[in-house]
Image (tube, rainbow, N blue to C red; front, top):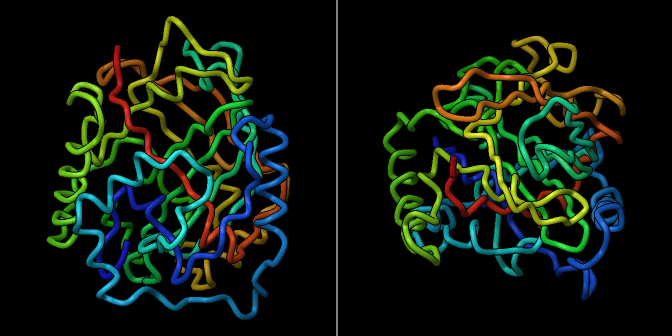
Length: 314
């Protein structure tokens, strides 16, 4: 995240220095997944940044103070739109690159919802902050649902980053990450803990913590909008990177330039899951690109990835 921060929920708190007006039409949520993907992609790809002049300006320190406000952070969980609320600014993961994807789930999956149906959507890959000495990659994944709000994932390896290793695809991303180590990140984590306590419903309905975002919601609905009655959600999901998608750990090019080189049809990640904290891990699918990556103002300023607001249940 910023100045030394990162925190998992930040992947969707991220907005850029200014927020453009909303463009999604009235009735958007009722559209099919394909229609939504097309509308979002039209906006994302309309005005890509030139790879030779990518923006890097970050929010000021005064703006970053919002991250320490629990009420500000609750929006990450309660906003249902695929667009940022008007006026809200991304404070971490400010700049990224987005690609159309398909989550291909194997027939052997024993889980429900999107962990059975798979689905199409968008993946935004970004760094928590523009600091290549504290390289902190993360991914927001949006699976679009027919006639309903999208189902989203925020995954990363660690909020404290991977030091000077600049290979975005060096580590596995997951929905459960280690506690923050730096003082600043611990303070932000505390603010998110308070934000979770403010969410509607009882504590049993809330996420377990800011570093353990449950997967119950994603397992409760299929990509064609069918509600699951007998939900079987994984406790943890892992995105194991394809080494061929990565680059040398000393590569100092802007991450958006490197992502721009990844061709359509690339398997970005192998997806594994475990039913409980102590259960064995099994491969359940792959995340595959269905377009080139695009870095643009819309996906930096308006594209929004909601945080799962429900706790995992056995």
